[in-house]
Length: 232
Image 1 (tube, helix red, strand yellow):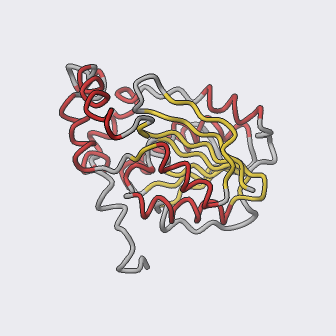
Image 2 (cartoon, helix red, strand yellow; image 1 turned 120 degrees about the vertical axis):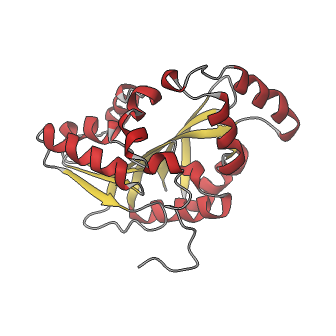
């Protein structure tokens, strides 16, 4: 049972992510291709003996693509609607090495051997910075020494004086229709109710959690960043 004082990840998952109708069209809207991240992880020794934990697995785009390449994939998410779709897809594809866990960054309890890889895409921003730091320490605890964290998220690679310009440019490029991508209204909802952080704050959290950042990719928009980190 979750301790009362823990941040309630389900309550802050976003109502749309709990809505089966919205979830059914999520992949088309998000347009995620896991190929580049999988290629990167294979270069870092992802192989048939590996264990991968996907935190914030959503509908399973990455987890299901990774499953044929490794021994064990643990797909973790707080949304029952997302996990229902993920489970159906895993069964449809005949994947028997995908474990589906209803939990979040703060409640997932890893079992078995330490993970070789942890992957998370656009999920950590649902936690305020205090809880991000806690979550990163928890991730480090179940990664083996030398294990890899691949983290993608909405992470601002700008300084506070640049925020207005960066945000207005981002909003200006929003999709006109929800079916085509994230609309201006949805992006404003993210800014007002979710918890994206600055890259320079996140990098200190990673260091304190016991990670060495091997590589970082900041999108030219200064909104999106990706980190490849190794546990000390």
